[in-house]
Image (tube, rainbow, N blue to C red; front, side, top):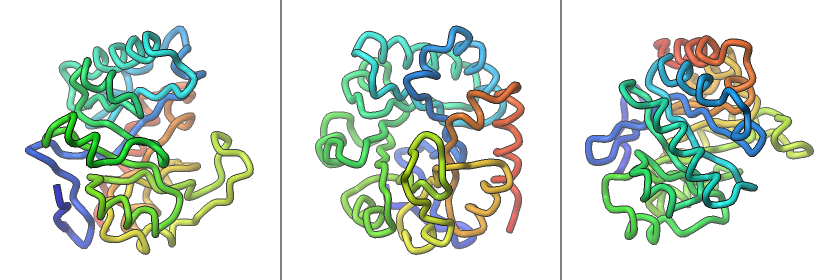
Length: 220
């Protein structure tokens, strides 16, 4: 895929698969929540969302179970399952996308194993790295942290101004995202945003996801 442009913004598509605007990512603790399946169903039903099965500390079986839980939640909705890092799990569950960590597999190798239709993303922490990942064939990048976040304590925030410098990469902004900040990221040129605690740990995860989606869908 090479992203097109729409209103000056990169448009992420590959083989008929469109990249969701909102990406909701798990971590090890969220993956173990006893009511995760219920939370995931409310998020998936909120609108077209990428549900990311991510658990850096999980063993293979647990990661597979997590992916299946999120995949089941997405069934019958406009939401899609993405798997982070674990290419083997992505193949088993036929994920819509694979997200690679900054030091993960080369995009070309993942593409060779997964085929042309699967969306492949990469985590990056600078505009330069975003442009490099795009040149290597990544369909999108997670760029961040844009604001300080508890998931990366002590990591300096990049600020929304970094987003425009990442062009022509298709940027999903991550780090300290709220509905208001999602609006600011779109204004700065981001295609979409990613969130962890702001959605999963909200008292109403579906409502939190809807609020962010509404802010992303506003015209500029």
